[in-house]
Length: 256
Ligand SMILES: [Zn+2]
Image (cartoon, rainbow, N blue to C red; front, side, top):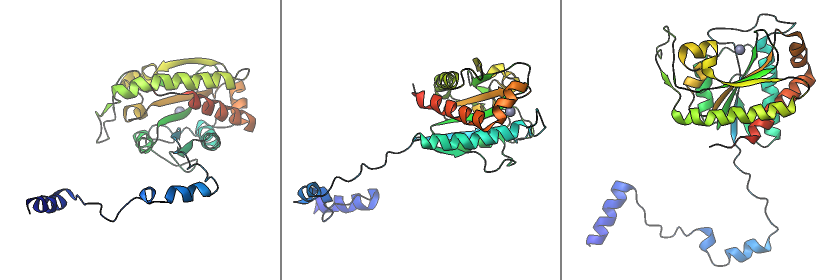
């Protein structure tokens, strides 16, 4: 009587149900033999690692649509982003873009949050427009404070120590993939902390890094104001090489 009362209470309070009549298929006699006589079923599809690809701009601060050497940064980011999404899927990853059109406006903090929603890591694609040539990578090397007075989230702090610790090895892995895949076309100009960038030196980290809860890296793929870099990244072959090199680097990454 007492035992039955406890069971009724447990059922009510915890949703506990005795599994009478719910024997699993593998517990039934003969189930194993039946399976063995059938042709081998294909292995169940492995859960694919989701990579978030963020083609940088247009955002609050910069549309990046001004023409440079016959193209613009926003267009290049978008074109390479689409290629990277495809190449990652070909390599066995799953991939998601943070926007769905070349001129789709998305704030940087929202890009981070889109990526946080299920992706294992995020890469933000950009092009540099300072003097010089080649590619460079940036990762959050310290927490930052979001500095945007008109935004209700002004003062938001991040990322966590875990994101900071995991982002450096991701940047290093992608830099290795890019150095190998782009050898002879573009030189690696270094792997730096976000605090080396203009926004990062003010906030402590780039905005998508501050709001990121997953490892995150910003890639300045080329210097678009450099004629040779621009010619490379405008070409279909150059964009394919860039996407393949970044994807190869992502495949090298092992979370710490
Ligand atoms: Zn940019």
